[in-house]
Amino acid sequence: MPLAHIFFDHISTTPLDPRVLEAMMPYLTEWYGNPSSHIHDQGQRAVQAVDAARAEVARFVNANPQEIVFTSGSTEANNLAIKGAAAACAKKGKHLVVSEVEHFSVLNALPSLRNGGYEVTTLSADSDGKVDPDDVRRAIRPDTVLVSVMHANAEIGTIEPIGEIGRITREREVLFHTDATASAGHIPLDVREAGADLVTLSAHNFYGPKGTGALVVREGVRLDSQIDGGFQEMGFRAGTENVPGIAGMGKAAAIASSEMGEWASHLRRLEKRLRDGIASSVTHLHFTGHPTDRLPGHVSFWVEYAEGESLLLFLSVHGVMAASGSACSSNLKGRDEEDLVASHVLRAIGVPSDICTGSITFSMGKGNTEQEVDHVLSVLPGIVRRLWEMSPTYLDYQKKILQGG
Amino acid sequence: MASGPYSAKVMDHFMNPRNVGEIEDASGVGEVGNPACGDMMRLYLKVEGGRIVDAKFRTFGCGAAIASSSMLTEMIKGKTVEEARAITNRHVADALDGLPAVKIHCSVMAEEAVKSALDDYARKNPA
Image (tube, rainbow over all chains, first blue to last red; front, side):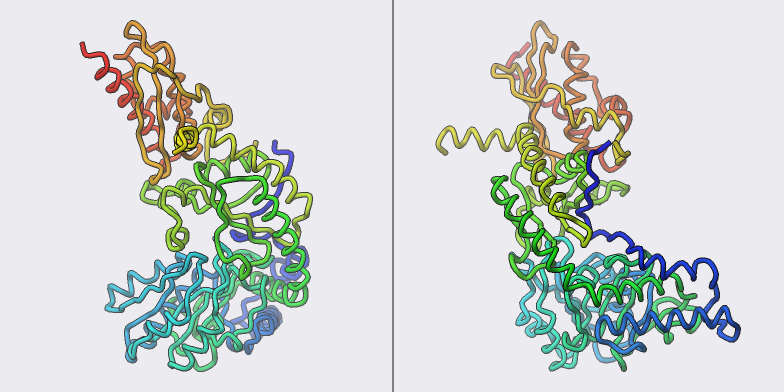
């Protein structure tokens, strides 16, 4: 059994806050009504829960309650934003602008659009993972209907300049979608200030439940619903509402609104301790992402001559749970070896593909401590050394050094 | 430890790999894979009287790649050149109590490494 149980993988998901569970429980037990059956008491309770959550989530991002469309999570919200906006605006044009560091739920929504006659301009990111707003300006054409650039990147932590991009899209009268899955609840997000028309949120990334997310749809923006059925969620999303999940998301949003600043200063301290500790104890190491414009508590890097999955496995043996953009760890449950591709984000920022495999992302959460950081720092250098000792590429490097090459 | 994607045997060979290292005066050396594809293995063999008396490896790669390398060296030590040539990736994977479907290529790398090292041996020792 591992001696420690250190969760440094908050970009994949976060633990449910006990206060959120408490807010959800009545709708998993006593109040099981369907909001569409709003005439009777059970249905009324469900309506009230969903309305209250809608108001909380709206307050959380400075939107109006009627602009919050609950979904099953951010994958669905991203699909609705991209495909829904493309379909609704087809008369205006069939051109989209998307950054290359987006999540798969954005990027993989594009091939079917391309097949339907849409053109997509892909924006490159710089070596810190940042998208240049001027590139957005240059990419917009008269037939452009949507620009999609994420708020922050989960893998390398970089925060994108969405405010500047929003100003450009407004000026050019193009819809702006931003995927705030990794950022919401961790850094302030004001959809008005950002000039965003569509914003993706995921509850389980800020201590809420899995299976619930939302798309913020600015008033007046037209979207074609992607799920046929009833008229829930203002007609944007058919299907009976996940009432307990929505109640949980509302509570998680309320908690994050009031506590986010406190979490962030705690996480900045941990981040500095971890980053400084790693920098001084592991050589051949390269931090990824922007050095300052990054998610609090997020430390990402790659190590030469060491492979990412091996690093993760050894960390896991020492009770440390982290993530990797490594080729080999990306999809162990996949059926094809083609699933084993190095991270598109690392390739985008110019990390050589033979090196992409050694990447690690430590993402800390509000519950992590300095002691946990110190434990990680105590095991990481030894793990790296062990893998180097096994690596033919490290051996060749050492021989080259000995030969003065 | 908690059950991850790998069998206990894979984890044992990953955490305690057998025969890591080099053989200075190797009879044959094989190198397969490519760090760009996520894994690379170098295998050193010492052959005496048509029999593999020692095998060492160095591998850059995931848990399955390191475990496959380690298991392979255990399997070929003491075998004749012909017997070692007959080893397939399936034998390596089975000896590890199986590998996840997407990791089968790691056992293929082990099979290719031994064939490559034996080819090198054959070149240096023409019949």
